[in-house]
Length: 120
Figure 1 (spheres, rainbow, N blue to C red):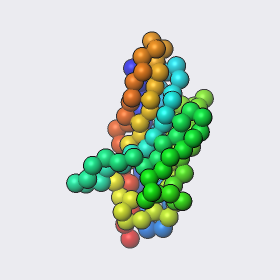
Figure 2 (cartoon, rainbow, N blue to C red):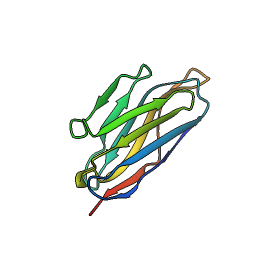
Figure 3 (cartoon, rainbow, N blue to C red):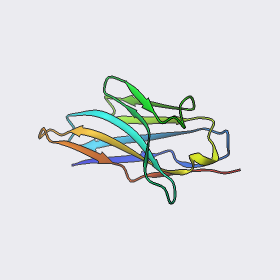
Figure 4 (tube, one colour):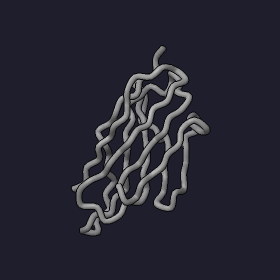
């Protein structure tokens, strides 16, 4: 069993910054891809940023140049530094990790979500 716990969401004004964190715990051998997704009310969940075990990154066009994803492998943690936040960044943010368990089972695991609200 693997659990992900996110933190760092909240209310921020346009142009502000927030840093999200997501920590994995449980039966973890290694973690391959880590990512952040978001879902705004009435919209589908979308990929925001992804980082591979080798630190290769991918970003949604809407956040390029503003958001930075990073990871701490010994700590089983992924971060999302969000700068120059816009109203349209308001959403619930979810982390996702591709985990190889000690049993050698590959599992994609999601966090419970953390809300980000950008408002004047």
